[in-house]
Structure formats: C-alpha cells, structure tokens
Amino acid sequence: MGIFSSYGVLSQEKIQIAQRLSSLRGGLAYGATNALFELISGANPPGAQQILFKPHDHCWHGVSLARNSQFSFARSTLAATWILTCTLANTYYHFDRNGSATQFTHDQGVPDIMLYVTPGIDSIELNVASSPCCLEARIVVYASAGITDIRIHNRNTKSASVPVQTTTSGSVVRLSTITNIPCRGGVWNPLDIEIKNDTAGAQVEILDVNIVETRGASQPLSNGSATLVGAVKP
Image (tube, rainbow, N blue to C red; front, side):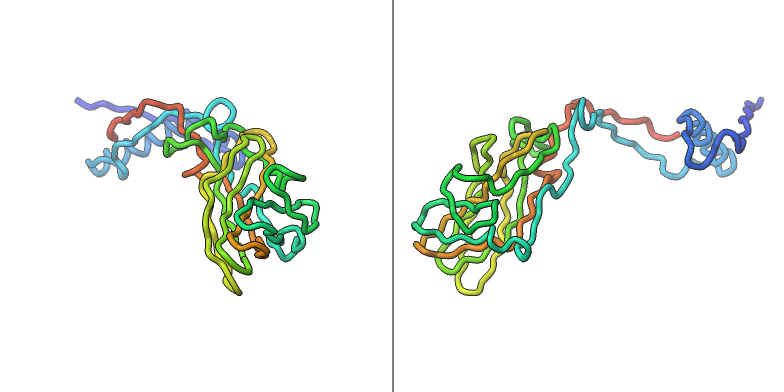
C-alpha cells in the first residue's frame, strides 16, 4: 500500500521579486522540500532540532528596542562649552550648553544636554537584568589636578547616576564609563554632566561624550512569560 500526494506548481505568477508573499505559499514550499528530502534519503531534513519561542511584542504595545547612540560629540568643535574651573573643592559643577565657560552648580542654568529617549525605555520599568532601565555613557575627561568625580543628573527624574571617580592630572586623559543614568521614555531628557574635584581651582575638560541606549541597561524586560518548545522536525 502506498500513500501518494501531489504538490501544486509554484509558478512564476505566484512569486515576484520585491512583492508581498503569502506565508502559506512559503510554508507549502518548505514542507514540500522537506518531504522530498525524506523520500529520497530516508533521513530527517537538515536542521531538525528543538526551537525555543518566547512570545513578546516590540514598541508601542510591548517592548521597545534600544536604539544605541542618542547623543555624542567631540570637543574639538565645542571647546568653550566643555571646559570649566572648579572654583571650590568637592563641589559639583556642570557646563553651559550656550557656549560660555560659565560653571553652574546643581540644576542651575541651561541643561548641558537635551536627549530624547525611546518610548518605553524608562527608569520606572525593569530592564532585562531586572534593574531599572537606564542609559550608559562613555566620557573622555582631562583634569589639571586632583581627583575628579563625574555623574550625569537628569532634571526630569531629579536623580543622578552613581558618581564615577577618576584620577587625572597633568597630561593624562581618562576614559570613564557611566552605566546607570536615569531616564524618562518618549520625552526630551534635560541632562547635566556634573563634575567635582578635590582641588580648588582645578580645570576639568570633557573631550568626548557618547550617551547610548543598550540592550543590557536600557532594554525593558519582555512581557512574554511563557516559553514554548516547538516540535522536533519532522
């Protein structure tokens, strides 16, 4: 006894370059080629395995996707904006986005950076590591003397990242990484790069800044709670 089946011709009219293709037709072609392989070889098709599926959404009705760099600059084009003198020791100052060398203390003046954060990425939500969603930054800093602390303060959340301490003096330039910058999603975030130095009169310069959304720090945890295991092929 034999079981026979025939397959419809996948004609040129049914598949056209750069046009929409029904998933049903792709599924029929997929099944047909697997069946032909089994018929000829007597073995499972290549790639037979278990496939894990975790249901989840992206963007407006589910999880937003981190979009990498949201703000960056090189100081060579904005020199006056990113140099300040720490008049008092151990006092936080931030820069003036308008281009002068004026230094401001906490929440004074114009914010250093206006940064838009992807909707859904918000510090009131948990990220994939079960911590509050946040931004990350890489900052290249130079200081003429002393020990410098750097943090990024968000005026929307009224909170700041944990200060990162770097020892810089003379001609030494340091790369600092900040991993927990608070944020609000879907709005402009006014951020200040706040600097303090333990030496009065120390001059601090920001040479480069890159503030990013990353999967590890910014990506919200998926709402999908079930893990489904697909059947082994065939």
